[in-house]
Image: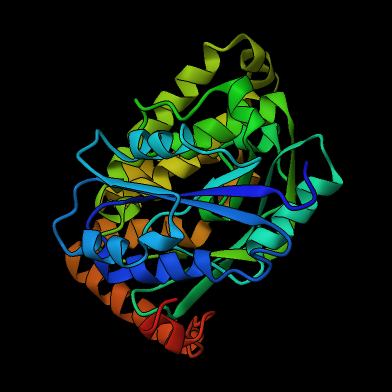
Length: 334
C-alpha cells in the first residue's frame, strides 16, 4: 500500500434528493483527505427525477465520474461504480446515509497496519429524517461464523480492500436486499475481517427506506441466502457443524423483517422457530416478540400507538442531532 492510498467511494443514488447533498458532504469533507489518503468519488444515479441530478452536477468537480441512467437495482449500480474504481480501498455509501468525521482516515490506517485484512467495519448510528439520533449499533469482532449465523452489520460502516473483489467477485446482482451480507460471507471466507469499536457511519431510518417499505422482501431473501450457502462447498460443512445457531439466527432475522413489514403473524411463526433452534439468542429479542404478539392481537390501532410511543422515545433520546459538518459548508460548497 502506498504512503497515501487512493480510496474509491461509490454512492448509488435514486430519488433521494432530500438527503443526497448531506451524503456528498460527509464524503468530500472527511478529515485526512489529501494528507492521509486521496479520494476517488463516483456517483451512480438511476435516472432520478427529483432534482438529484442537479445536486450531483453541483459537486461534479469533486467527482472522478458520475452517470445518471436506468439500472436494474442497487447491486448493478454499485458494481458499475466498483468496476471503474482504481483505489486500493473501496466502499459504498447510499445516498441517504452519512460518514462520520474521521471514518475513512481510520479505516485507511487499519488497512496499512495489517496487509492481511480484506475488510474492516465499525459501529454506526441510526438517525431519523432530520438527523436526530435514534440508536447506536455496536458490533463485535465478528467473522465468517457470525455472518453465517445472520448477525447483521451496518453496511455504511464497512470498508474493503479492492483486491478482495478479484478473489471473490462483485456483488451478486440477483440479490436486491441481502446483497451486502452475501458479499460479507464471501469476503470473510477468503480473507481476514476486523471490527473497530469506533463510530464510522450514520444510517438513516425513514419511511421511504428500502428496509422499511420492502421489509418482507428481506425476509424472503434471507431464506434464499441460507439455501445458497448450503450449495457452497466451503460453507456447507461450517453450517452443518453450527446448524442450530445458523437456523436460530436466520429465523430471528426473518422475524425482524416480517414485523417491520407489518406481518406480525409471520413474525411470530419465525420467532417460534428461532426459539426452537437457539433459545438463548432468540430470547435476547423478547421485547420484539411481545410487540409482535400485541400487534397481531390488536391490529393497526396497537401499531399506531406503539409508533407514537416510539416517536416520544426517539425525541428524548435524540435531543442531540447529528451535524458532523458545518452548515456553512453545506450552504457554500467548495
